[in-house]
Length: 166
Image (tube, rainbow, N blue to C red):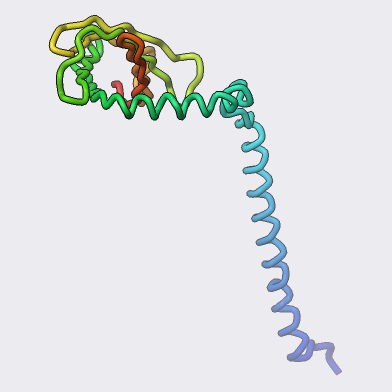
């Protein structure tokens, strides 16, 4: 009599790898998740703004300022002109009736949405007919959030635009 395996035993041994495929599949998924969690905690501080509590307290004042700006009805149009070395930001400012507002104090605050420490501010010079011009020399190419702070008499508004500088 020979010690040959029975037909049922061979099938059983050949199919032992099937449960281990599931085990190794879960091991791979858990390892990938662990790597992602590590990089998530390592790269993001969790702070999206400095002093969030105090900024939150001023939220009602911000809403009131937006309502007042909407009631004024000022129209703000902005565009970038020129190449990188000679780039300038041109702003057109008109009142609700479409008349140019030529004696406003205008400045623009450039903020980098994805990087801290590169923000800068430019002041505009009036060029008549409600137009204002400011030279722009950004420290880095890319997308910038620009906040226009406009004051005329006792009225103040803030307008926001995004620009891509190259």
